[in-house]
Length: 544
Ligand code: G1P
Ligand code: ZN
Image (tube, rainbow, N blue to C red; front, side, top):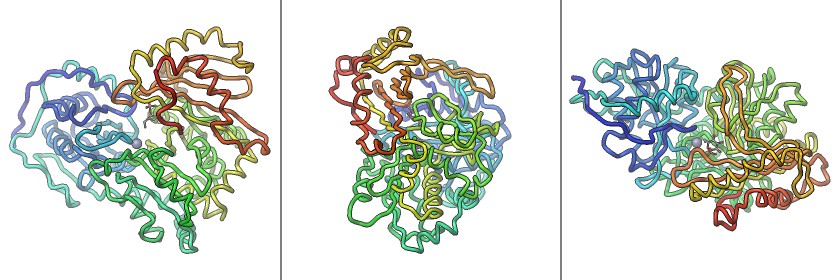
C-alpha cells in the first residue's frame, strides 16, 4: 500500500467550537471536507505520529464513512495504532475512558451530541486530548489555523475498508487497528465506582425503572449494565438499538424531547425511576413519579450523598459547575467545606480542575454531570449514581429531593431557549443588554437590588488561561440571577439562552410551580432585553 498525497484547498469555517466541528451531514459529505479537518488534526495534535488514537462515534448517519476515512488517513499519517469501537461505535464517555486506559495521544469522537441525525441531520468531529477530555482552546486554535492554510492530505492508496463488525486486531499498512467491544471496558469502570451488589439487590427487590436510550448510543451500554449486570428486568431499557437517524427523533433528554419517558414515569406503570441519555451518551435526565430533578439539583444531590458511593467514599476534592448552572451545588460545597468552581459553559473548562485533583464532581445545567473517572460528562454514570443513592437510602426520588431542599434550600431554576433566531437580531439583543451592564450594577430592576451586572470572564485557576464574553449576568442581592447567553453549538441561526434562578430557603415556600416562582425574573429578562420585540417571538422554543 502506498501513500497518496491529495492536493486540497481550505474550507471556510472549520473552527471547532466547544463541542468540536459540528455541521450538517451534507457539509461533511463535500469532497475533501472531512479529510481537511482530520488532516489538520493529524498535522497539529502532538503525539499522534507513532502513538495511539481512539476512534468511534454515536452511530449516526455518516459515522461509518467517517471512521473508515479516519482509519485510512491515520495509517497514511504514521499513527502507530488506532483503537476503534466495534461497528465504529463508542459513546463519548466510553471514548474518553479508552483514551485514558490505552494511554492514547488523543481520540476522534464522531457525534453531534443531541442534535438530530440522518442524511438531513447533523454530524460532528471532536478531538480529545490524552487526558480523555475535549481539546483545550490552544489545541483547537492550532487545528483551526491549520485548516485555513491546508493544501494537501494523505491517504493510503488501494486500502480496503477495515471490517469493523468483529473485535480483534488487524493492520492497515504499518498501523495496528484494534477493534474493541465498545461497552465492556466502560461497564467494568462503572463496576469499580458503584455498589453493583446494592443496586442488584434493589432490582431484585422489585424496584422498577425505565431507561430511554432515545435510539442512540447508550442502548447497548444500558442493556449490558442495567439488564445484564444489575439484573433489571428485560424491557427496562427502551429505544435501545442505535439508529442512524435516532428514529427521526431528537436525542436530547429533556422535558420536551423525552416527554414519552416523563409520561411513562408519571403514568400508571408503577415506575419508580426514569432516566434518559442523549445521542452520544454524555447527557442525562433523571426523574421519579411527580419529581423531575433539574440537572443543577442533581449535581448538588450527588455531591451531598457522594460518600455513600464506593468510588467517592473518601469524599470530594471540590465541585465545579458551569456559570449558568444553578448555585445549588455551591451550598453543598460550603456545607462540606470544599471548593466550588464556576467555569464557562462547556466541559473542556473542567479538565484542568479534574486533572489537578481540585474537583471531583462537575456539572452543567444542560443535563451534564460527571466526575474525575473520565474527562467528559457521563449520562449512564449519573443514572448509576442515582441508583446507588436510591439503593442506599431506600427512599423515593421525591423524598431524596425534598430532604435535600429541606436541608439546603430549594433553587428554583429554568432555562428559556429561543432557537434559530436571526443571528443579527440575537447579537443586537446581547449588545443591548451589554450596554446596560454598567448602569445596572448597584441599581435595581422591578424593585430587586442588583449586586453586579457583568459579562462573565474566567481565569483558569490551574493554568491561568482566560475566557471572556461567556454570558451576561444580572446577579441580584438575594442570590437570584438572570443570565443571557448565545449558544455555541447550534448549526443554523442563533440560539438565545436565558437562565433564571431564585433561591428559596423556606421549606413552606418550596412547592411553587417553577415558572410561577420565576415570574418576576422572567419579566425582568423581557424588560432588559426586549426579547419579544428583538426576536419576533412570543415565547421560548424550549423551556427546561
Ligand atoms: C450546550 C450546553 C452546554 C454544553 C454544550 C455541549 O452548549 O448549553 O452546557 O456544554 O451544549 O453539550 P451551548 O449550545 O449552550 O453553547
Ligand atoms: Zn452529548
